[in-house]
Structures are given as C-alpha cells and as structure tokens.
Image (cartoon, rainbow, N blue to C red; front, side, top):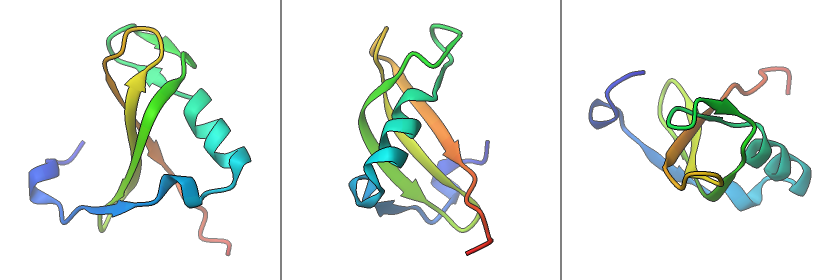
Length: 76
C-alpha cells in the first residue's frame, strides 16, 4: 500500500452508495488481525486519492481497524 501521508486524501460519503453496495462492502472484508475473510465491518468511512478508493472501518469480530480497497469500473 502507498504511504497515506503522501497521498492527497479526500473524504467520501459511504452512505451515498446504494444500500446493496453498502451491505456488500461491509460484509466482504478481510481482517489482518483475525486473518479471516468476511467477518464484517462497522463504522465505515470512505476515502479517495488520485490512485485509489477505500473504506476503513472496524472488524465486527475483534474491533480492530480494517481497510477494504475498492476497484471501481470505468464502464460508466
């Protein structure tokens, strides 16, 4: 991952996404602390920089910070 301090980071509104997208992004996670997939995320905050978009939140199981990077389609 790139150095977040070197990126020009912009806050995005996670809740502007459709309910279906929100549900999917909050469920399809990887926790580096639990080393498990799809545990879930709470307290989501969405960000973007020049090169990427990601959601940060807290793992439902352990409460540690988790990050899900989002790959957005260019087919719009």
